[in-house]
Length: 145
Image (cartoon, rainbow, N blue to C red; front, side):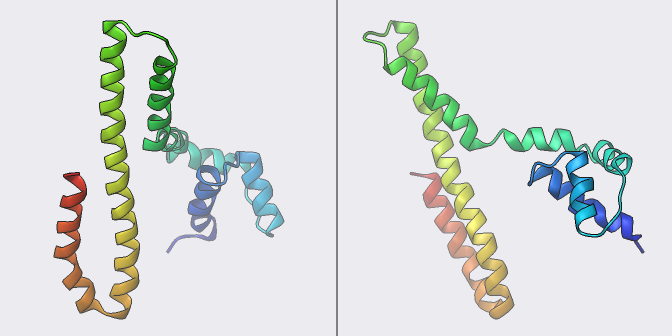
């Protein structure tokens, strides 16, 4: 059975990754909630769990990549004339944007479906199972747009 301190690690991790608190902030958050934990413990968990790597990976989202590519394409479009190389680059940016937007739609659909399936399976398991093939067919239509 996990100790009280070990049970705090997932919460500390969430505070680091989602709330963006550093070690001192996490210690303070726990202190205010009446729990004592040291910054050394947080640092140990942060290192062992590779929280910094996870945080960095989470910051590179499809949305952020899409925004960057759109900004580059927009910069090219602001020019009065494009040479062959710039035109080629714009075509490539357009293709990337198209693929990323399509992926975003599929990703969003899957995320909503997962939440809905969890909700529905608690109420009507058979109906939740019956919907699965229809959802797969729906995903195929999103991928073909």
